[in-house]
Amino acid sequence: MVRHGRTTMTPAHRLTVYERAGCHLCEDMVSTLSEWKAEFGFEIDRVDVDGSPELAARFGARVPVLVHDSTELCHFFLDLDALRRSLRVK
Image (cartoon, rainbow, N blue to C red; front, side, top):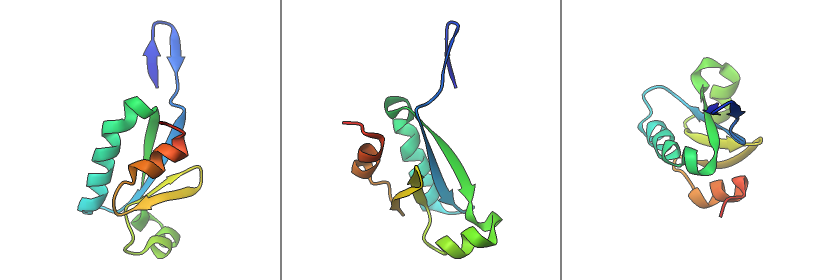
């Protein structure tokens, strides 16, 4: 949440990164996403797939996975074009 004077602004979008501890690709994706947060207006939720047997089975070794509005945008590496299309940013 960003505060400007008395107005509170909430990010327009929430992205979910499904990841696991010790995954360098996961850290790379989150780091790259963080560079675009302010410009694109989103927040990042990080979910450890190993915290849930269902998620661990669903994603297996295919992490990180970036999801927006229940749609998988990319995995392993950030697809900036897919992110822009999903957020409707030019």
